[in-house]
Image (cartoon, rainbow, N blue to C red):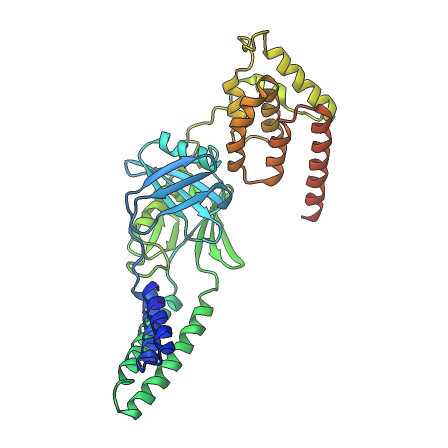
Length: 398
């Protein structure tokens, strides 16, 4: 497509200079634009550098897939064992059905990426996989090739004297490009997907979906044109060239994700460490706002001595930070942990929490964590009351 734009700009410059080649160059630009989609091969897997910072992951060093992934752009994430390592599949806003996959060597690397993007132990949201290219996608690709050929022929005939051939080529080119437009509009219809969610997999498109329990994927394997399990068959023929559907590598990743989900459904998964039982003392448990905040201040006071050290046998700073940085923790508990930490060392907490906020996708949760660092308890109480009122209004609208 970049070549088509360059040729189009050259045609524009030539038209300003009143050069006779300008119309032919413009037609050639249209032909190249039509060729670009069917002749651009899908991106192949590549080794890249992954730089993790709070709220974002930078991917660089690849030929075509360099990009910045921000926590707020992610709508779903799931991990699984894949080959000799691990794979993290990320669903991004605007790329439904086409997740980005990061194959990582160790669980520590997976955790580093997940911590940077605010992804918890069990993943979150929904990750959709386009199962296969549709017939209309194949027809559109071939129509683009034919239309591009017709426009290229029209451009060549612009320099020849055969008026009849030029007219016929122009008419065919116009008809085909109109057909490409129609097929392009039809492409917007929902494609067949398999969406992985916390309650199971969902196969379908548009408004028609079939739920599938994860335990149905036990003993799953990939056949030539379908994913197969003892009582299940999902049509998913890989696409070797078209960008629609899945490549063989992407389908292998889907198999790994489904096998991992099936293992978790049967209880074969690492359990999350929720920390010491003392963290329950931070829960609100139906208390009034002023009573809860007073209790948190009392917990903070009980954790320190004169020099600010933590008492042995009670909560540790690491436990509090684990909760504060856990995207799966209850928002009230995250806020409570930050409140206690801020009472112990407000300046140090402010420095560490600032980048943490970039990993929080929910605006009201961000507000809770931010207000927890406010020293004045009256201001905290007032701000929390406003946040809870906003939450109630949002719940009524749903």
